[in-house]
Length: 295
Ligand SMILES: Nc1ncnc2c1ncn2[C@@H]1O[C@H](COP(=O)(O)OP(=O)(O)O)[C@@H](O)[C@H]1O
Ligand SMILES: [Mg+2]
Image (cartoon, rainbow, N blue to C red):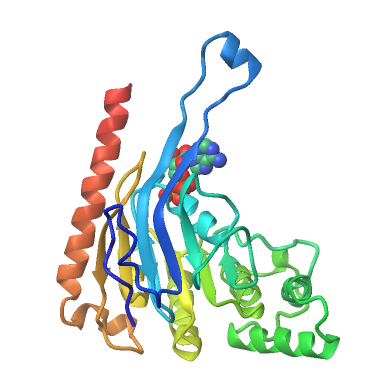
């Protein structure tokens, strides 16, 4: 259960054929303003290179976390994998085929839940299943919804609307909805970022439990070093932007199922944590220094 070593050079031949997801020399540029008035005033804001030459292979059934300073391009990368935005150069291959848009092979969990406020918990999940599998028999759809509600611990809240449940419960709906379409890969963009520490801990434990059951490939963006170390097989550390790259990939060899209480006793935990802390503080300090110079 591992991903191939980082391939930072331009060669792509050594990308393992067995990789489930392959990012090959991915660059993302957001183009600057080119409207009539900005041209007239010669105030064209330049293009912004968010990601530059990112190559990464992800093997099936691996839990991968992406960590990096705020604004470095983590969401940009995940959105490209989700097919919600295109890449400027390079390509992203899923089972060898280029990603051209969103698909039922990838399920997305958003930080702000992105639930339909007028729908109940079960309607939110059911709607996703119906959208992706419109020909599925109603009974089968109901079975899937029930199964997901049980899986994420939402029994009793099926008929409630998002505003009637806590943030933690809402994110359970977000996770159930993403899993209900039975994706090959679960994508999560800071899924616990808006939750208090206690709820966050509960949901991390739930994700660990669900991952033990399903062993789906997961790509999760997080700001939390402990969260990454608790859940991941591999941690991808990104450099600051602009032109963010993958700096280093860490292996997390701790045995599973993992236990939060035991985490700091696993051999190597403190070294991994120190390495991540030094990476994040170095990159964040550089962002701050650039900001001060720019003033
Ligand atoms: N649609 C967009 N147009 C222009 N710039 C964008 C757009 N989306 C993101 N960016 C810029 O790309 C950089 C990376 O953003 P993002 O991927 O959201 O960072 P992160 O998720 O790591 O905090 C930021 O500087 C952001 O301002
Ligand atoms: Mg983000």
